[in-house]
Length: 165
Length: 428
Image (cartoon, rainbow over all chains, first blue to last red; front, side, top):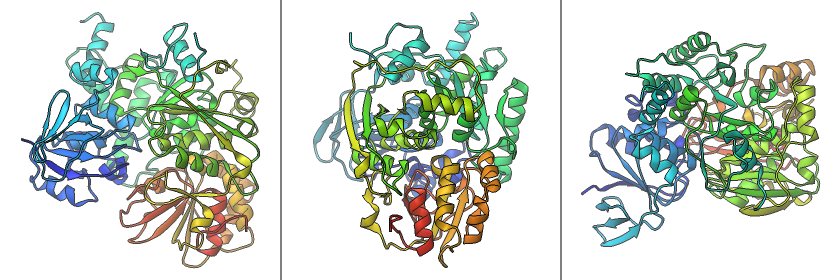
């Protein structure tokens, strides 16, 4: 059962998730080393103390600010899931495009160390026994996820245009 | 059927439909697609798209792509220089004409260049791999930020996939801004009122006589910072001032097609602001919506003053600062950094003696670019230092150090505070 590895508040910006000074690093294979670079969580990530599938819980407006895609790719590199009360538009789009798991859960209550079960319609906090409904992703975003991400989606569209698919 | 807002009309045109409704999912044709140094990532994703297809990666229409180096100019590291080199070679190979390299005759911050060179026009769909692409709504366009992988799709096919037609918040600003109260104060006040997520997934459309009287330079500030309330875009409907700017300042001779909202357009919310009653505002650390009147934080000590950026690095901003600092001195213990939004602005400010006034007062003039605003290239803060800046974000660590603080303000507040070394009301 995946655990909550860090609990964050409102308005966590992309500067917080991936500081601007590392933006010259662009490749998704290289960005994870700078995830939350200015915070203690970065050391835990780099030390391999955070298992794949672990959960970040946050309040409203997670990922606000810059459009930098590195903020999504650096978390995707650790296969983290972000459960937040709300996401900023561009971050949510980038996450869906790159396959970073995002869950909109307006009532979520969880502390670091809690075990969460993320179902189709609700998040169950196994530690406290409480459950919280999930707000479905906008259909326009779900369509990209269902297509296997935006690269795959775009590739198919390009091939269709050239009569190759 | 109800009328349409500006964004609805633009999206209807860009999808070849008579109308679109809020919530419709559409695939608009793109008129202008802008990237800066992160074109290096777009390029990586673009090449990835074509892998295994047997096709050669080609940009759908090289005349509609703009590539502008601004985030790290001149390059601060070999890594950046190599990214810039790849993008430069790509621009040449693809025949991209709207390419602005590191050059004094045509360089600057992307959000100034698109306007200054007349690329951004009324009624267009503009996308950029930068959240402050909202700036170009000041020209009556629907302009919004997207990620690099989405841009790769635009480069390939010339459309943005799966755009949900956004609802619109109508902001009506009437009255006259008092002396020393600037468009920056208005937008800080608005962001404070709406909150940092109050306009998430929505568009802000600006109306009222205070907007009609405002020059393009001020409208750019409003639209630039609309994203700080989470807005997908800010839009000032095209009017005589938009057309005047495009013809007289940007040298656009083409026929322009303004897109105006219908009188019976449906708005999600209407916010009314009386410009006459506004005071200078400050956004306090560490969120842009933590806004207070300057009087609430007056006296707070500061170490660095920054005037510049895509928000407030235009000629009138520098004029206002020079007007306050001329013949006087920046307080000892405070360093003042000025970075104009483009080289055209830099040159005009130099010619008018504005830069001399600022230098004589003790300011340092940096070359146009973004670096200082987001802590990636010069102007970083030390531990426990405080900056007062005319830029657009004050997030923890934004200016290169999570142990520092950034306050946001207008150029008038910044210049008045430079003289005293503490946050100061410019009306005094």
